Length: 83
Image (cartoon, one colour):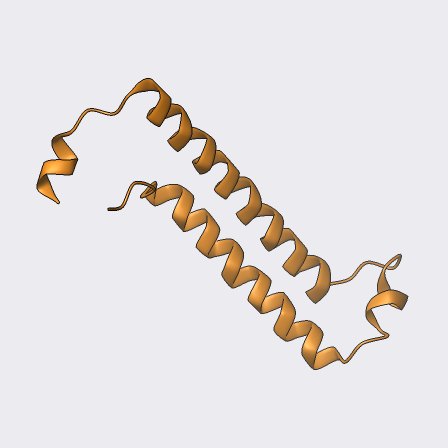
């Protein structure tokens, strides 16, 4: 693995890493926001969310938070070129 660390990346690869990182940060933020939307619904969406089981909605919100955190972590690590 030490050999890959010393390798220079092309401009194309750097752009790819930058694009994937921004995408992961954006999707992570969006999923965390969706988790808050389901855990703490606003008045406008309360009737829609109340149709479903409250326990399952909370579990789904936590899953959204975990997945959003994972996407943000993946954007931070930028480990996209594994052999």
